View 1 (cartoon, helix red, strand yellow):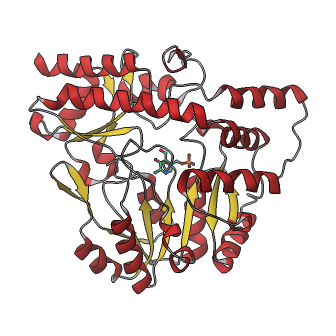
View 2: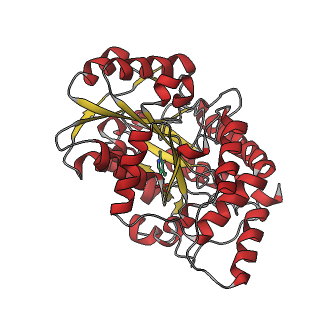
Length: 387
Ligand SMILES: Cc1ncc(COP(=O)(O)O)c(C=O)c1O
């Protein structure tokens, strides 16, 4: 496992996670376990493809061809058992970009957009920055696992909601929504004529015993009213290369999105992003299997470390490499909790409240780092609690 143990020093690489530690956490000795990228190098095959492309030395305009469409559809079929048509694909630099474009292309000012909170913070910006109406369906924490309040879900859909942004697997609560849950959400969206934007960026990062199901794969009808955003960037640690795609079966929706992308001048991906996407999906599978076993180890370590502790309990994730930590029993105000993690434990976590008010008393930990780093993070938190 040296591949996932001896990782390069990321300091001095303009790394958001490592080089912004001081400005965000006020001290250089805080261990960064926050923003959702990994400390692991991407598969060798991806690096080799990038080096080879770099050695070519000419970086002119590059297009996404049928071979790339095929590579993507093979990946989606192989990993998610969903047969997509190459013509359904559109490309964009990132999932957040696609979501912003989709909100603008398919909704109007004051239209309701439903999200399930606590959730990935940019979902809130998607609503507020375009003057849409925020409608929330808070998730319920039942026996340390999050569930959907379907009664509330339907009641909220009736409040002028045009779009439901699904996060599956869910960041930060780690749920991989089951087939019955997805079918129920889909049926309600169909009943109330609500378009689904399904953010499935974490779809390949699934823990043992769980299965990711793209909501659009449930039926042709659901497929026709869904935009599915996917990307190799979380799976293969390529976020800095900015290459993602969306699967949109409905021609009318696809044309509206494509028109909007064109109006922003977003008609092409960058050369290196395309190269990495192609190589990752063609050759990255064995690496991904190893990654998943490291993440499984790391996840279990954290869960076990806090199993017998009163103060913090970990919400066991079914997918993603993000752990949602319930710190409410520490008995601190939220600001004191943040200070405790940053100043006493010296661990840089994501503030639970940035995911919505339901995140009060919670923190999010990124475990996509060497196991020794996870152990160090645990040690720092336990030492701070004990003292
Ligand atoms: C749910 C979710 N969607 C989207 C993104 C970011 O996607 P991108 O970098 O492709 O915009 C993240 C990153 O953490 C995420 O967790």
